[in-house]
Image 1 (cartoon, rainbow, N blue to C red):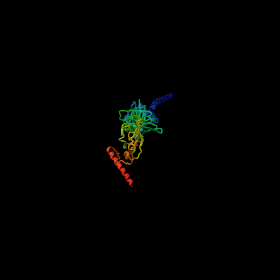
Image 2 (image 1 turned 45 degrees about the horizontal axis):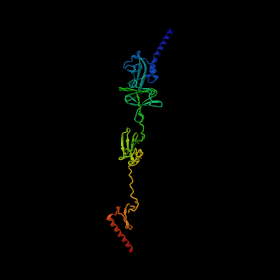
Image 3 (image 1 turned 30 degrees about the vertical axis):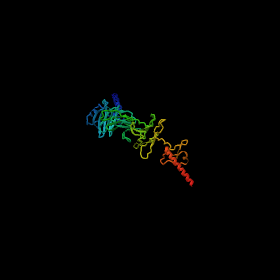
Image 4 (image 1 turned 180 degrees about the vertical axis):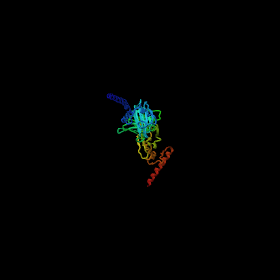
Amino acid sequence: MRTALRTAIATALVAGVAITTPALAAGAAFAADGPVAAATAQAKPTAGTDAADSADAKGKSTQEDGVFVRNQILPNGATARIVKLGDTHYRAEILKQGQRVGTLEADGHPVAGNDDGTFLVLFETGLTSTWQGNYLPGARPGVYELVDGTRVELTLKYGGYDLRTVEKSGEGRVLVHLNGTRQVGVLGKAVLVVEPDGGFAAYVNGSMQQAAPKPVVEPAPAPKPTTGPVVTLGECTVQQVIPSVFAQLTVTLTNDLKKGPKAVLNDEAGKPIVVLDRDHAADLGQGLTIKGANTTTPKLGQRTQGGDTPYAWTAFPKLPKGCEKDTATPTPAPSTTTPAPAGNTGTTTNNNGQTSVIPKGGVAAGAELSAEGDSTALIAAGAGAASLAAAGLGFVVLRRRSGARG
């Protein structure tokens, strides 16, 4: 008789272990505090017993001394029985096919469970959020965008993950700080669940569209402008693009033998901002000026500040060979001194540019005639020449007589 009783007890114990072991394995996914919570769930009565069924009435106390609130169906078909244990203390008992597979307790802060992609968040107010999917596993540090456009940043410091807000300047506010267990964060209408490996899921309340967080791929910074090659546009016209002193802007330099230099300041899209040329060689507002605008070797000066800030000078591209002549430089005036021609022409030139006519023949011996102050040459011709000769002769005779008297 005793042998039969012992055999029956042993059979019952083996059967009990076989029933509760699957519940423990599944319950670990929905345990808020890891193995401890799972062990607690194993010790509690399973669904399907009279004690559990009698508590499915709102407002009635359960065996855990709590007040039943509601049953909630999860996306994977499981049931969450919500029980109030205090003002900011709620419990969710997860049931699958009549058996308890996990427990979540929100005591002053929200907790979350993840059962193979089905998430349940229980808040300390008794409210819940539940969804399936929207999960990005093993996320790396970086900025992520939610389905509603909200951005969050996942950071890794000292071996632990933080989920932060994204701020225009400075470090964002911490939404979730992992301490080795699954954590919950809220940002606006978004509910965020972060796993210990950095993977996280998001659910936006009220949104018709749901999706996993997407990494934000920032566009690569535009390459800094560099000096381009010299391009020949015509027989005596060349052009070159150079960087501006303003970031991402460029200046197009054109050197034309006939039209002169031209400098065009362009924005990031290549749209002209200001144009300088021979007639308009400076724009102080943009810090641009052309030096030597009337020559074939001009230079562009650039500066970002006014006042005494020095210019950075860049030479315009050189003109092709054969176009080097500077048409803007005036041709030197011919010399005013003309060498005397060979032979006796009767005309001499003095150092002041005045011209004298010396009579020929006997008159030339003592004649000393000079031009008037207007440098007009005195030319003897026809009857005038005869009168001049006679007058000159009389002057010489008079001079001789005077000499004789003295």
